[in-house]
Length: 174
Image 1 (tube, rainbow, N blue to C red):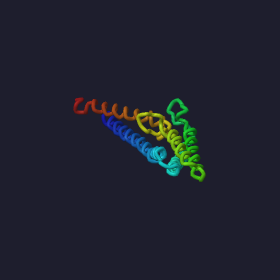
Image 2: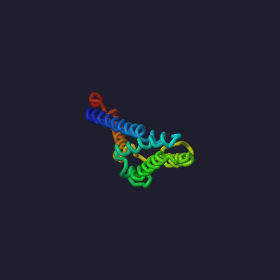
Image 3: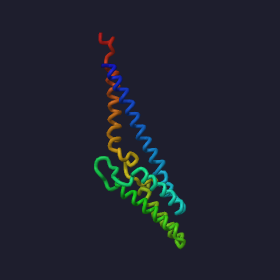
Image 4: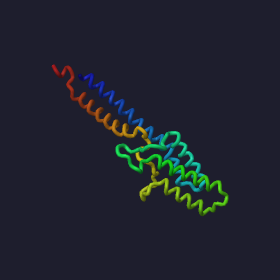
């Protein structure tokens, strides 16, 4: 029995670490491919730079199928609607592209558009300049699985290690 508990504890430990690393990797990949460029677009000094960064974001969204669905875990919320989020970013990018193509666009119009784009990209918060993205999008489409399985695996890991530590050794039973 003690050996079985040890095996279960090791297996659960390995699975818990693997799932946790997978969550971290997905989050890092999303930050590098999307939110990093969103911050750059929000802080761009020119419409040309903002359009370049938003193009990278839109390409990432298309490549990773983040343009349809909902990233909520249990109850779908409109703020986590991927289609609306991606449409907003795509519309902002297209607006910037039109401004770049139009030689008659005034600098005031460009600056106002950059401010509007910044409002679309950043959250309405006084604390920081965090990017406005749907919750759990880095884990999409497996967000519910990751959110439920990760703590469960860590709980099982602790339980099996505790049981293994408490279970008497063979020489203690005699």
